Structures are given as C-alpha cells and as structure tokens.
Image (spheres, rainbow, N blue to C red):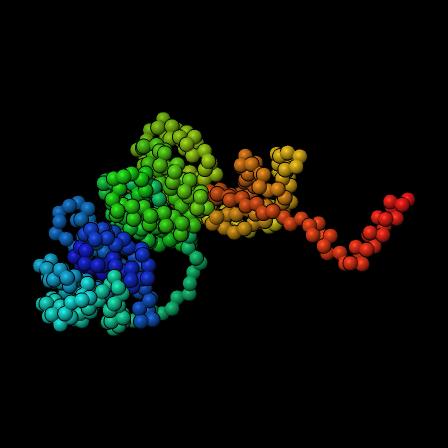
Length: 459
C-alpha cells in the first residue's frame, strides 16, 4: 500500500489518476477537493500496488478539514510506502517542511515527487526542495504523465517483498450506496467495515469522491462503493458538486446491486423516486434502504411504509430493508437482500420456459390491435443480465402498447423470482417465411405454373 501525501492542491489526485489510469479521484483547481481516502490499484514494476489518495494536510481548524486530516494520518499509519508530493511552481512552503518532518518520524520508506515542474529549471527546483532532506526526489508533471516511469522505478526499489500467491476466491458483488445528501451513506459504509473509512458529519455533501471498500459476510465478498449525495440539479450547484454527482451516477452504472438509502425521518421525497428511476433505467438490481428507522415511532413507521408503496409504486418489486446505520441494526438483512437480488438477476432463463409464460399470457389476454395491425408474439428468450432483457419475437411488434408491455412484465414476474430486478422488454420483428418465395422459383417451375393456370381457365 502506497499513500500519496502533501499540501492541498499540489496535484495528489492528478498523480493518483495517472498511476491508476483511472479518473476515480476528482481533480479541480480548488484546494481541499479530496476529503476521504480514495483507494485504487496500479501496476508498478510488475507489482500490484494499492494506491491511496488523501486529503491535503492543512492547519485549518474547520471540522471537515480536521476530519480529513485524521483520515490522512490513518492512511499513513496503514501504508507500506509514503509518497510525498510538492508543488514546484508554488515553491517550498513552511507547511511542506512540517509535513516532511512528520513523515520522517514514521520510519517508513519515503519518496518525494516534485509536481508541476514542466517548463522550470530542473536544477534550481531540485536545489530548492533539497532542504526537505527526502531522497530520492522525482521531477514530474502529473497532468502530462511526465516522470511517472522514474516514480515507478523508485517505488519498485522500496516496496516490501511480494507475498505468496493466493488463489482467487469467488467473485464479489459490486454494491453501490446512493441517495440524497446526508441520508447516512458514509455512516453505513463505516458501520459495515467496522472502521472510519469515510467522513461522516452532519453537514450535507461531505463525500465527494466514490469510496471503494471490500467486506466479506457469510462467505460472500462485497465490493462496496460509497458515493456523493445526489440532489436535484439547481443553478447554485458548484462545479465540484456536479462532478461528484456524475461520479456517483457512474458508480451506479458500474455496480451490479444498488442500495438506495432513504432518510426515513424525512419520508420518501421526489428526488428519492427520481433516483429509483435512474437505477431502473440502468437495469441494476435495486434494494430500498430505510435508514434512521430507530428514530421513528410506530405511527411514523407505518406512514413511511405507505409512502414507499405510493410514491415508489413503479418499484414494488424491490425489497425494503429497515436499518440504523448509526447503531448497526439491519445490516444482516441488507447484505442478505443484496445477495438475493443478485442471484435473481443472474439466474439462468431457458427459452422454453420464457416462451411458455409468453403463450399463457397472450392466450389469457391477446394483444390489443385492429384487424390489420394486431401484434402476434411467437417466442421469447433471455438477452443478458444487468439489465435483465427478455427479447420477444413476433410480427407487428411496434404496435404493442405500453400497457400490454407492463402486463407481460408482470406475467414474467409471477412465474420467475425477479425480486429487485428491473426487466427490460425488447421486441424483434420476425421475418416473413413467405417473403420473396416467388423469386426463389426456378424458371421451369414458373413456366409449369403458367400452364396449370391456363388449363384451369379453359376448363
């Protein structure tokens, strides 16, 4: 594990993205964008390395900055190698000296990357930062990916010996936690991990980057992703908040199961319904989480359940789990629900079984239509998972109304266990078996048909 440390806005997140070849960490000119520990994987000198991007070490006494500083200190304690980043254009700052002095006391391999050195006199830059006493110092330009090979060589020289190879276990379930700001996503992640991995404060919008973590429960591996709160777009949104929203939606697209957290104390809002619609459009398995359940009275709980049934009536197939992220109640039900909906989304569906359900549905209620435009549905087969697609072949399928599509989806749900799984119906027009048949006749067959017709007219 290699942790990237430094002052705010020296390019730590840019270096993290360059080494991991991802865009997992937000990058902006505003200091203090990164607040949580961001984990990523990189291949350095043939070794798999876990990189950790951290928030800038600042003397600001702000509550969030102080919490981010504590996150950085914990990441340093857990790391094997420390990579300190400084800003060549800003020059050597007093806080750089303080950070370097503290890092040297950790008794861990320490490297120095001088970022934003492009266009500057290299000798002068090296001379200025030699005062920190950290060797080796690598001149880099992270935004242009210059000098990364030197960083890789220096890291490979101080990495601990590679552990013995371990056989890969069963694949994990990628579970994304999404919801409005301040509904308890980070608190839930910390409770599931048993440590303070993500910042959790009463202030809305604390999380900005997606936070990745792994847990194992009852033999099942879960890859958790905590995302930034997604609020309704307004003109007052900052650029950083907009980027956080985009990354949250990207994390939802990359997940297999999405846990939509709803603040039970506030009830089901319009934004909660909108987020559930996003999950369904993406075709991801959905679990509805009612957080802060322990703060409600019996009457309030009944009212919230009624709101879920009324305002999320389009997602009645999704299981509802009540939890208290603060106290840890309901976590077992949450992981069990995630495991169940994942199994439902990945089940094998035979063509014969799907076609049998389709025929029973059409016989009970034929598709509506006029005499010349009545759809005829012949057979169905599976078209993949995430999203779960059921492909139906037939004729005049473009005339199938939306109400009949919903009827067919409900028919499939009655026959198969699709708990938490949105179904996407696709219709394909079958080829007419008689189309072009006249052109396939040989000239001799055509002459014979003409003689038969002529004899028929004479008679």
